Amino acid sequence: MTDTPEALVKAIRRKTRKKHEPEEKIRIVLEGLRGEESIAELCRREGRPGYMAFIPIF
Image (tube, rainbow, N blue to C red):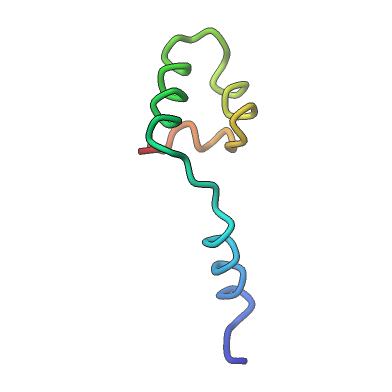
């Protein structure tokens, strides 16, 4: 086995990454724009780290 531990971790993360459907992405963005709850609360509820709020989800 020639894979480094870092390469193995990257491969696992790639395969277990959460994928959002386009409709779900639009729903999340619209909820964020409504401003009824904070971005932090929205990220927690959707299972996204808070810093991800600043990264495009499309």
